Image (cartoon, rainbow, N blue to C red; front, side, top):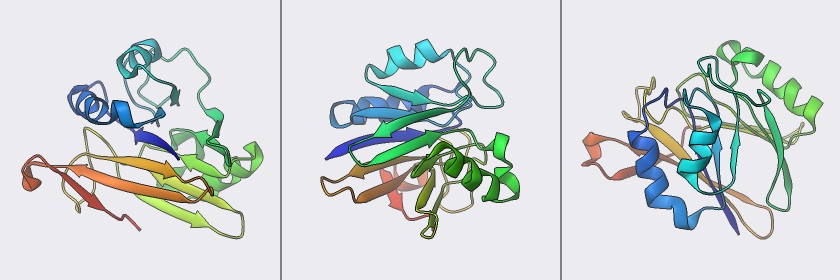
Length: 179
């Protein structure tokens, strides 16, 4: 099994990012950041201390890499990490789905909306995940910063776990399904 921590939209606020990295570092194979980190990519890589896959967000002024990254995810998938703003995610998933097909991606990780989401397009064989914002959430439920843990089992099945970091839950993690 392989496991990934998926985050987005921390906007320079490193507190929650450091907390989840500290909690999961020894349990994950990599970090996926969907953009708007507002720190240099090398700083994120040093902080993580493990493989990092990342995208440039519309507020990432120090980003010196390709704006999107395509990579092999486990033994079964090709993944695309993007911010979402480049593909009109505020108006729907069509542009992002088209980009996934263009890039040959089975899984898409995106940010920008600050709201967790999970979409499955069975005809196109594409799954999309938005972990929400780890610092500045915009959803009403659950209330608080969010991130995602993605487990890929040996048979290739996906097990996403969306988590909320909220004072409402006494600082403990609250798991939820955004579908």
